[in-house]
Image (cartoon, rainbow, N blue to C red; front, side, top):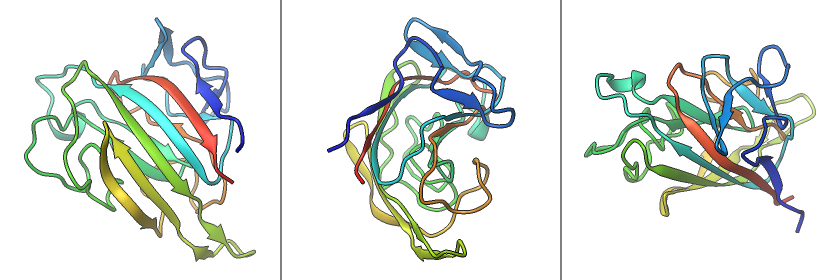
Length: 196
C-alpha cells in the first residue's frame, strides 16, 4: 500500500494553493488549525485517484445566521464533487444541501452533524471515475462516506460533478478543494491514503 500523504499538518499551507491564482493559499493558520478567511477557495497541490481521504472540521457559532449562511463550506473530492459542510446540527431531517450531503445529488442517510465548536470528521472512500479518451464517462466514481463514525453514504455513484469546484468536467485524478463561503470554518488533520 502507498504511503499516506499529509495535506495539512497544522504548521503551514504549503500543500495548498488558491484555486484562481494558483498562488500559495492564504487562509489563517494558528494553533494547528487553518480557518477560512475570505481569501478564496483553496486546493491541494497533490492530486489523487482511488483514495481514502480524512478531513476534520469545526463549525463556527453563528446563532443569527440561517440556512446556507450558517457555517457554510465544502470539501470537494477531486475538485469535482462537493461534500457539504454546514451547521445542520439538531435538524430532524436530511436533504441534498445539508451537512453530509453530496451537494444537490444525495442527502446523507442520517444527520450526524455535531454542534458548532466541536471537531467533526469525514472519512471518504473514493473509487475514481474512468473516462474514455475523449473525456466522456466510462465508469462513474463511487464513494462511501463515514461522518463522525456514522455511514452516511454507501457506495453511491457520482455520475456528474456538483456546482462549483475546480473543473467543468470529470477527472480521473484531482485535488482536494476546500470552499471559502465567507464563514470562518476551521480545518485540521487532512490526509489522503492512495488506494490505486
